[in-house]
Length: 383
Image (tube, rainbow, N blue to C red; front, side, top):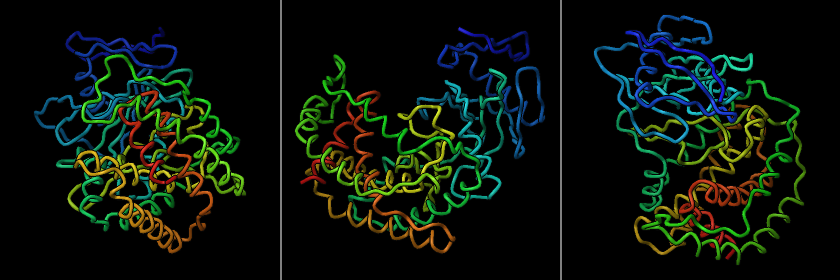
């Protein structure tokens, strides 16, 4: 366990920041609310103190409110503080990927992400690393794994046209961000295939109520895997991939990263893939990787819609195909108007098919009940 610094919260209260070798931060739960208030004050004062630096983009106006803990995601401790969302990292990212992306999007006035107000950095290993970040709090938003399945079930596809355009605009605004050009995206990401467990069993006493049994789904995957890997290899063999067009991308672009606010859509979570190695996060990737991931996620959202609404799996296949075609066409039209390079559609096809495997690996590592969505989608795709 390493020490990083001590924070004076006032009134005789101090917080000692410690971390594990994996850079997971250790706090006492009762200290987190005080940390949120401390960070906002530091950002507003544009103040640096030993061990910590602040970056302010917009003034944060707080009345008599107190920070209120909310469950947002597993990688941060999050608080609503007045009209703001304060995220305290549970684990440091030495690449600072998220904050570099947010800063670039803020400077370019990209409108389809929650407004960023500033952040506090913690000094570790002679680097300043994102620690606490403040965004606007989005009232009455709906997460993508809720609204997208609903829209697919109701056959409402207007949203895919909007998101195709927004995705192209995001890629335009991310392009100026410097990347590590020594990282070979396809080579590095292909190594993830080695993480696939071939003798998987769900954890003992695992609760999968209202989901297909993960063990039975894994048996289905084993039946499909030979055909899947054959088809994947065929698509890869036809590729002529070059890293020269790599740039900063979202890195984990799926429907779950899109908040719906009335009729508007906001993109969140720029930390990159949860299954790729942290050292790859500052490397570039082809924009096709974001496009492909989103296309795959449309199929996954359909499986969610079928499960929640007790429809037969595969019943939404035609809607999925229409939604995927519409998103792709909308992206290409907007990219052309913005002067972006044309998509390599062969690469999109390959990466979209490969994404199913990454989803299976994610389920094995973190969320066993999720395995039904990629495996059943693959079953539908392979026929």
